[in-house]
Length: 451
Image (cartoon, rainbow, N blue to C red; front, side):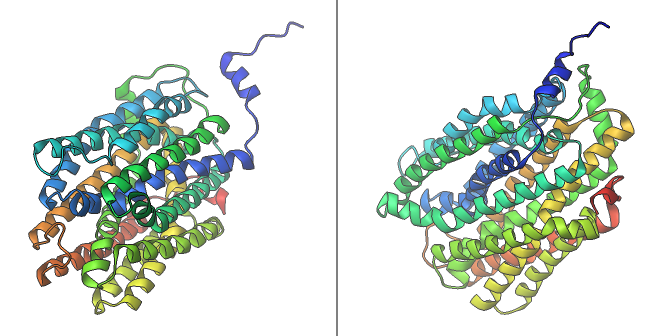
């Protein structure tokens, strides 16, 4: 009998090791890296621009909008490239190629240039933040697609999503606890210089963590042998109702998160009368509870399903914020609300990403077209647009209520605007997202397999 040689795809599959703990930990390290950066941008970017670079809030809004416009193009292009690459080599090569440019732009985005006045400093901030957004798009879209490409097994995907959330919680916790103390220590009181040195260290750490993903993770999911036209990929994805509705709910979640985390430092300083370091400790406590929630998420998802857990958990997030909004401002109410919020967010985030992977798989089964790259890219684009759109809206809100950049005290109207941005708007966004998931998102075809 003649033994035929393996095809290149089959040969790669035969050489790929089985999924194990080492790969799971490496994958979680990837979200640890990205959430170090995401936590910095979410919690401290507007604060960096207004209170350290002394940009007026309206100028910050324009910087965020201009920089994000390029991601509208970048993310879908990366996603289409992933979907048109051969099986086993769809996302990882792009992650490896974008790793060093991403680390380089992390440093440049936090280097204030152009002195204390002049147009040059605004242009520099816009260009460097735009570069950070583009390189983040390349690496993060490739990493996100790996949730669908590492394995076709829904149980493994839920473990991957849980590992992502644990990594994300650790990354945000590190930034919450270490960022401002490290900036002050490195800069000896000069936060502009301290941020630059701190971001150099962050860039090295992020590059090393993403190197683990690029080295230890493998793609095992099936892919099309042919390079499908872009219109075929887009048509198949836009017919995926579950993906569309969940992405809409995730936009609301990101919008609410952007307002809440972006306004936290202002709320602690100007409403509660604390310091920006106190805001970091609140973030830290919230993320510790978030890690506890992520650890319990898989167990609850097997009982309630990913859709039920995400919907209920997101509604609870909004409920705690709404209750805090209805109470007079106080340290006890704020800390309790943030901790309960973090616990519920930790419970529902792994379910959210596992649910997204399930909808992508359901769409591929129904249409016969796998769109993992484009699905994760457009989902990422939507989240980033919500992030910078929310950041811009928060900046305009604070400007409209009279916030003065660099002041150590704010007027009553400015403090009222901070409260609206920190609690009222996020509460509405989270409740709306949770209701949308429970009422509009369909039950995934293979949800019963995870229970």
